[in-house]
Image (tube, rainbow, N blue to C red; front, side, top):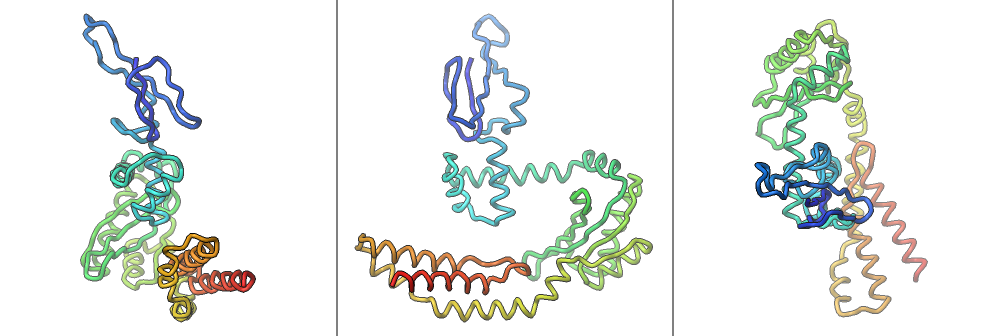
Length: 303
């Protein structure tokens, strides 16, 4: 009998019982030790292992899910994710972080394309509220149009298009309408931004379905003037806090308490400059002003 572990922990080569640190999961892999047995040395793994780790994987699904959250919700880079995992006690290399990020993308793709699961969920739900939007990574590239159900949060259709004419969008919405018609699922609402071609396509394909503009786009358009003023204020603030690097160079050979305190203030300034807000609900200029004001207050108190 041999034991293996998931969650990024090492695998022992032998032993009847293995006790890992608190929070780890031990998986027992059994092998027949009788040479005359036709299943000699063939591994019998627990049926529930697939709920915790991918086949031949050294890290559990919880680590893959965490990396996916770091990458696509918090937009962290691979080095940043690597440091965050090390801080949590997961022994992992940057290359493994990249590989697990790819595994996460593959798992998401499998779930999104699981038509039988989506079919059963929509039929049980009985109705959908469609959201349509186009994503363009770079100017001049194809626009990825995505049609999603707001209730189940399932993606119903995703197609790249070079053009965004009313005819192209009408074709996409008609395809979604036919799919839902076969499932006998009703469309009770449509949400989009204020793009004229989208409105015309929705009115043509779903003439009797209520069409509402996205509240996020409403809010974003409303605060555009404030966002531009905030961005300009942030640019002006940055001009007043330059010169951190020369101070850090001057302290390279010093290790006294005063030098350590100055390094801490320099690091705080760097962090404040790179910590952007998320418009329209977070104003990065105001956030920078508040953090710089707190630093000034602290420096004044120290002096």
